[in-house]
Length: 355
Figure: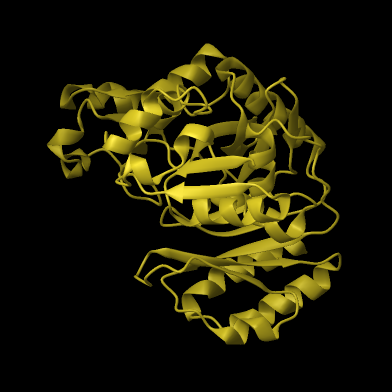
């Protein structure tokens, strides 16, 4: 029997478990504080839904497990400093950046960044947390403890955000989904739109960059890369060494979901390129109670995380896919009447992408 233990028992681990069931693969999402004796890790392949974790009895056991896939890669990508250094080593394009070591560096920072600097914690911080947008005269807003623990980037003027989700097998074979267009608001992904084919120039550049990263790290499994679209081409924003929110549309919009693709890669199963034959839209459900009314719309697929509903918390997502863009747009219009008003801008953005 094939078994996989997922370090972390959030929604990504839950969806990996769901993807394993049709394959006859048993997937065990486990919390960081689980009793090692209660987890069948000794005879499992180990993966993770998170980039970093504290030391616990379980993580101490897993640290020495030979079947912990990408164990030594996670620390490199989890720290934005070493992640940026990796990009520089591979000569991959990013926003100009530096380590923010002290207050005395601000004049040099703004000489490089211009009028807007983006400060990010080296570790932790997601969905807009642990990040600051600062202009000259606003630097006192940055907590003192951030110095030495943050990087700072030049604020980039970009026309859009895209992500590439791909997977690499143990033999180096790589497959990719088409680029996904993303809308972030307040640092949180609100909506994604994907098409069967993307701009050939952007797709080729993105695949080349993500391939270079995965090959350099000897990475196995699904990895996601977020990029800014600029007149000069794509600039890498960040990496995620795992299945990713912007790839959730693949559950209903591709022949193989990102979750199954990850399991195939880490278990050394066949890894064909997924087939995408129709446009897809994903709407994140953020702090919104579940409504069965959504299911009255035939194109809507609900993925609910069984989490307590709290403001700003991702509690599920809705996937829609159809070969007719008009049908997709009409379904989004109908969905708009079933969601709170804060979803209006995201749905309007998605409809604009479908035109």
